[in-house]
Length: 196
Length: 196
DNA sequence: CGCAATATTGAAATAAGTCAAACCGTGTGG
DNA sequence: CCACACGGTTTGACTTATTTCAATATTGCG
Image (cartoon, rainbow over all chains, first blue to last red; front, side, top):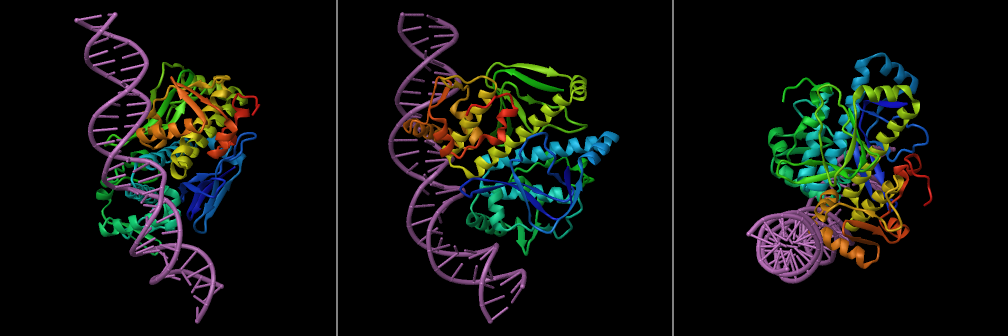
């Protein structure tokens, strides 16, 4: 059994017994999650939603039928699995090596590209239903520091973030500044037809 | 095509264009890596070795034959894939939320459990061919800070690390201190037959 | 209106980083 | 067999990015 997100935002997270929490990835429309685990495996993370979501539940036999029937579907699932691992690794790189501004900026770029692939970005940017607290939990920073860093980014005219809406003012410049290279997202294989 | 590590240590890593480097996981005997990627996918990470390694290369058709032929093998590969994702997520939790001592201690616990599963731990601990520099790159810290933290751990009689050999003096105490819970490694499904 | 959740601000504290030197073990070559 | 070169470790003094704490706005919403 797997879940295909049709609409809305969700996220994966892990927790420490003392309450510290780490968001381990955002789940956007088009994303797959909650795979059936073989045998006695226990899931190591939890999932929560940020907005109302529409989710298509795919029962195991249906998946097998689909995947077995068409090489296309099988390949798409392999691509999805790989890209989703690559995203997690890119977060690892961010948390381990990047500064606060770089982490937040890189995340913005990731989400921009992923949302663009599913047609959720327009000239005005995109809906961004993530509080500063959650942003902090995703980037391994403090909400206070996220706030200050966001102000810095605003002052530098990198982004406009208000009313749960994010707009990247100059994608090239931001991507350059935070060393974002979207190749790992394979946007061309993931629904999006190029153009920047 | 995949590679099965038979002997030796290796690791996955990612790099930033300016040279910063993040180790994204250690590859130990019994681990699988370098899967064939569908179509035009480009691998987002690199692999390097810490010691001489013996690696069994499995060609794609051979894998398919194996996996298709036996539900056991297929399940084992699914378990491996899941546990290896869980390890990456646990690193994310470490980098995002844990202190220096917790990160290093947690990594020691992870490696202890994984190596025990493949019979590479005895009463004296285990071989640990990782320099402090690499330990720093794995934990998102500075080599200098790793050094000082290690001294602290030594002083607290948590571990003995010398001559590329690591010994955890009181696993329970260390695991408790750094909030290590090995459930995500599923040691019982991964070769090891229990006993603490 | 008025709560409850967010966002923002300021001042003070601290974990971790930087820089730079010294130290150590070990293998190599003269 | 000594010297010295190399990678790794250790040390000290100092800087800084980020956290902490605590108060004050602001916003969305029933």
